[in-house]
Every structure is written in C-alpha cells, then in structure tokens.
Length: 203
Image 1 (cartoon, rainbow, N blue to C red):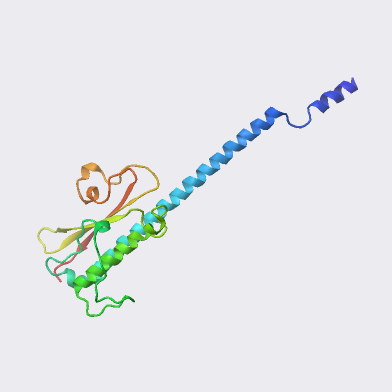
Image 2: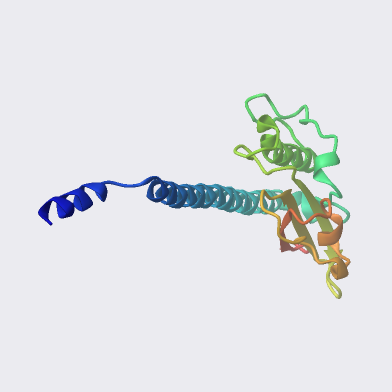
C-alpha cells in the first residue's frame, strides 16, 4: 500500500497542460484589460488637455478685447469673425518681429490679436492633428457680436470648436440654431466651448 500511495503522489506533482492553458488564458485577459485601461486613460488625458487649452484661448481673446477697449467703443468696431480656420491673416507691419508695437492703430492691434490667436490654434498641425500636443485638434473659432437692446453696448459670443479622440455626441445641439451649430463641422467627435462677454461701448 505504501508503494501505491507513493506512485499516486508522484503523478500529481506540478501542473498539467490544461492547468497551464487556463492560467495563460486568465493572464491574457488580464493583460488585455490593462491595455484597454491604459488606452482609455491616454484618451481622457488628451480630452482634459484640449479642454484646458480651449479655456485658456477663450481667456486670451477676451483679455485682448479688454486691452483694446479704446478701439472697441467706437461704433462698428468689433472682433467678429465667422471662421478662424479659414481666415487669411497676416501680422500688421507696425508690429516688429520681436512683438513690439510701433504707431499701431486700434485696428492694427485687433488684426494682430486675431493673427496671434489663430497661430495658437494651429499648433496641432505640427503633429498632423493626432495628439494636439501643441494646439487644439482641427480647431476653429467664431465670434459673433449682438447688440444689447436699449443700450449702445454689445455682447460678444465666442465659440471654440475642436475634435476629440473619443466619440460621444455632437457638442452642438441641432435644434439650437445659433453660433454653436455653425461653428465647426458637425460630428460626434466635435467638442465646443462657448462664452459670452459683455462689451461696454459707452465709455
């Protein structure tokens, strides 16, 4: 009986082929799950980075408007633009290569503001719009000016549209029928940021 017990014990040492296959299958599933989580984390990080950049670009142009207030208060003067990505812009001749202003008018300052603003948007072109590490991905911006009833003041609506790496739903609701629907290409990958800024035109 002792010999039989010894032989039985020897036969059950280690792993058999089925156990190894099951362990390999479980390990493969775990590695695939980790890879999927990493991919999702990278896409989420890009999404956050893009939205943060859009916020900073909104802040940039609104501050530029406030600094050029003396030009904006004149009737008819504004920063209105229908599509930033399609705009053919050049740096005004009164602005030096080092960024110094020499005898620039308010309109020159506005043109330089929009020119520099577009350059910040197109930073994503450096990476063929894949990651948008230097700018917003396939971005555009639109600025619409609306008069405020009963006053000489205006409301500047600024919309920034860009493309996400994650499919969701179009950021602009089709029934809105406003600047958000016309700014940027309609797509399930479109993301938007919209801000309205008060422009005091009375002083």
